[in-house]
Length: 77
Image (cartoon, helix red, strand yellow):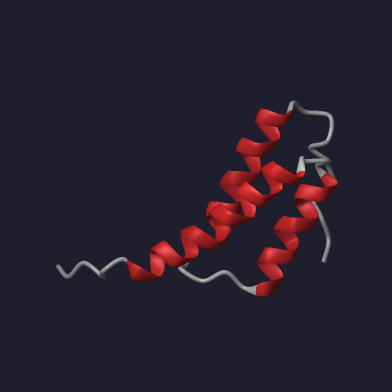
């Protein structure tokens, strides 16, 4: 698995966390979170030098977003 060529490490913690939360939401957007997606997110957080607490929040968002999407009813037209 390859990480993006640019590291987020030099950026402030709040910006890194916000960016990775968006990535986490995108990973879970289909209602499923594959093991590979979770491992990628974890590696991206580590590469970005995110704190353990922020990393846990990003991963929890990804897991929660996937679970939430699975429970949403499909809207009929």
